[in-house]
Length: 457
Image (cartoon, rainbow, N blue to C red; front, side, top):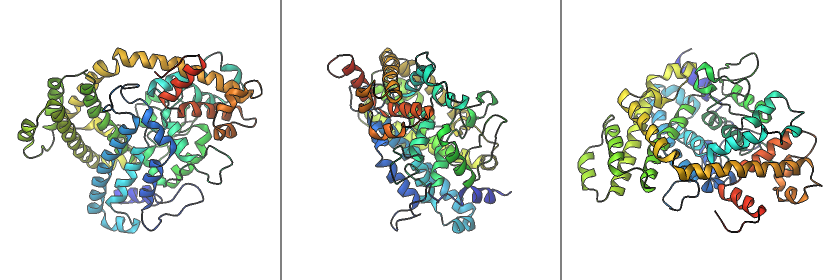
């Protein structure tokens, strides 16, 4: 199969929408522009403004949260998608004409997926995933889990924000709603969103493929994802005990946008938090910028900028631009392997050695100076107490609403409706999704209120 034929299979149904309602275009916006707008206006997206990116509850407004990180990642994703779209128009003009697609379609497809890439993250980031998983492995949760299958158990005991994100985008929580299919996005946007197109079991990390490192959908969404995978002609990589597919080509750009932004921007936040000095950041970003096609007059502009803070902002922007161009080059160089499913690693991991090595050093420094800072660890540790407490209360409430009426009524009605009936898995999953939907501040506020403590954290 030629590269053009591969692209045709991946993209021919990209405009189609999940669910039975909605048209491909409203006459003003393309289907992918509508995807972007639907995510922007979605409540779970707004919740990201009080979820942790680098530091929980920062006392400085300049520090990023999950919302600002998602917006910045989307901006990088838009550039990556547009540049790839331009390349495809040059290489396969007849294909692009047949598909009725141009560079802007790729820009918005990747931008929308990148905008939503963290939409399923629970409070306290990855430590929130650990806290939720720990509760469902605890003796307190076991009585509620007796009727679950192994895969349903794994969904909860290895709770995954990526799977929660797919569920938010593709499933309507309230069963009374006439609109099914969540945000009912275009199939191509779902393809660009799901980094781990597999179910929770079996665990296949040891196979060394990036797409198998985690899982990307719950059992409650397995049929929906299989429908999307078949429509987009994703290549199966099933095992005897579970289903998995190779990645959609565009998800490599979504992943790269995230990798670029958290690597470079977390450094800038480290400076704002007084964790990393200017000279240290200059020593990392300046050589990285010089590994790519350096902007004309870069050095002279940098020297003329007044103040370290402004110089770091300029280097951050220039470094992101450098990495965006290098990532698109890496995609083009590996295009055939990506299309046939044999390439299964991040694009940033195959950048030229100087760039790749500098990114590794940035990651190492960020772990030492930022992510493992005592202030971060203390608040993450508190989150490990807060989320299990909330899960304990609300799990008891959905199973025994008459005995725990106060907590049952505090749960939003949409989640109460989703948790009704005799399906224990749905009761537990939607309780976990409700707790996962809370912002950091909402979780802390509820915990403190029910412990008789006053004030905010």
